[in-house]
Image 1 (cartoon, one colour):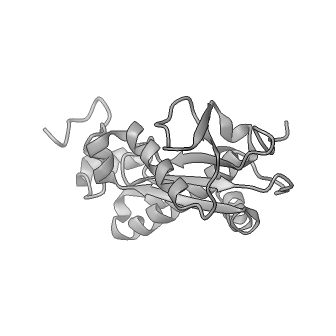
Image 2 (tube, rainbow, N blue to C red):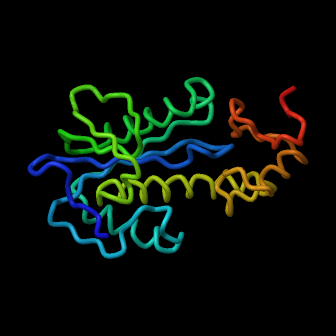
Length: 201
């Protein structure tokens, strides 16, 4: 099924999505993208349905063809302070603030959002598989966050962030059990599996 080009005809819409919500380490990153209604980007889809190679190919095309885009980053420390749900909303707010054009409608991937002052929003479950602008935001959020985690991997190679990007894989959790948490692990998250002792006890 082809992704929809817009939700409300005539509105300046920004699709918003985040990446890294379920990770154990690193920031949560969101993107906001305003696309022209005449846009054609072959292959653009929900970032989770794309390979890393496909996402990296699409990201510069999205940036070139969009009317505006913004990327918002909320650090692991801020996640621990405000919780991951609010951190995800804050990352989207920061992404919207980066837009060089002000939208009058935000299309949010998911079922909840903290309203952004002065801009109407619609929450759309699995929106990254329904609307082009949200799919574009999902690709920019994911590629931006992956780049951050690949740089962090150079400092902390034991955790294999070049592969898992901070998600709770067996290898990642085994590295935490063996080496302990790094400074960029989220202390408010359950870093080890049930059979492992808490490293923060």
